[in-house]
Image (cartoon, rainbow, N blue to C red; front, side, top):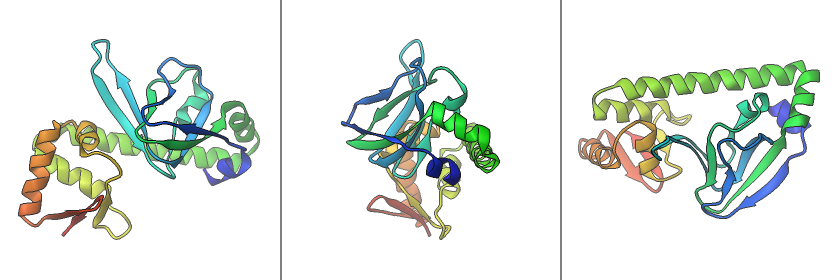
Length: 191
């Protein structure tokens, strides 16, 4: 994605906490990069039940697939005061049309996202809360293979792995008491 980001001039948008960036059904304008804050992507069922899709933090992109559809498929809302860079759809498509490297980078990035989503779906099939939580943590370790940065509320992690928040809290407490993990200041460390 480096070729695409370098070849486009983004439009910067500042958002207040709780402000909507786009809603499901809105015409697509482009894809985004979080500069500061967090953006929560979610879908709502007809009954109003929320399904959390992703929480994007600083340096993370989202809505790349919107380049190829007419409307957004979910809601994007600022969790906290945030700043995002919007890369306009028409300019991004024009760049992709003329740049094979940029096309390959985007294809690789979208393939990585598909693999991550498949892993997340697999986790939801795991019956044991303990194994589900450990699977999530192992999949998100940093370069050291032990540290997981927790960029937002634990209830968002619970939603992403299909657990009630209370079950996640109890499971983390149990793992901590067994000295399998250590928690502190926005991180969880596998011991």
